[in-house]
Image (cartoon, rainbow, N blue to C red; front, side):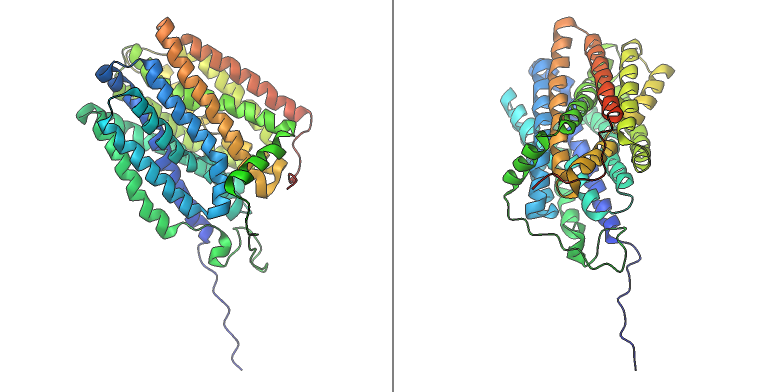
Length: 431
């Protein structure tokens, strides 16, 4: 009697395909969001707008980039990852192309701030947390590190290209290029992105092959209500506020301070804009290495201890940064770029791991979305405040010093979390 054939296991688990598409979208989101820093000086020269005013548009971008995260994570639970990401790419395309015709500052804020901030926020770290939590049972932190490194890769790819395009053809050509790239990414997402492993009849990567396919429970709660209820439950626990504060410091000292103002600060010292952009892009090279390695470490080392080390090292590097700016690139600046790059997004894998540990696999991604919102609130405050410091004092030195002090406080907070034994095994916030 002929035995029935068993279905042949796929050679490549589809989780890796979904992770690959997520990596590409993370690259795109980082490039779209970081591009405005290239255009600050050209806008200042063409329109006469102050650096503080232009910095406020970047602040709105960062704010929406962060506040979108928890709602986008909830929307992905409610409507699916693919539909939400496609809508985000459409918003970015509109926000990038419309500024070609702008004449007033509010139009800059509406396009670069609101539209691109919303679109990039959907494809931010909440997408990383959702995909890594949903598609991976094993190597979850390592995968989250690789996906988070997509942000660094986007910066690496986009910043030099946008700087050269801006120098050669003006900022309008650069922003139109961003819109075109967002539109090109939509067919790729529609083609290969899937919402859940059960959609393909498989379990998450690492689940034993003999287990039945885990079908996710239906989500009937509205996305906004799900996001807000998760915030209410998480806010009752001290761990949430520690993670929110420390990640706010992370945002203030990366996207808000260095990501937005490193290039203008370097140009203040006579460095060419393209050279400064290349240095900031080089941060992305080392960030890829640091973030992937951080994910590997998070699978093996207490994540609270890792965060303590990361924030302490970042604070020390900011203290020395003002002494490194010159009209050309010295070897000491490359040392800063190496160290800061390795530390840039290394905080993401341990923070995601702590959110999952405290708040469970179902709510962990949404709670991380709120923690990431604090990251961007910190970034938004720093982007505007540093611009105001520059306008008032003519230098960024005090902005770097305040950032260093905040990193010291974050390191102490994480060390306190570890010493009090607050890192639990995985638990779930009450529904």
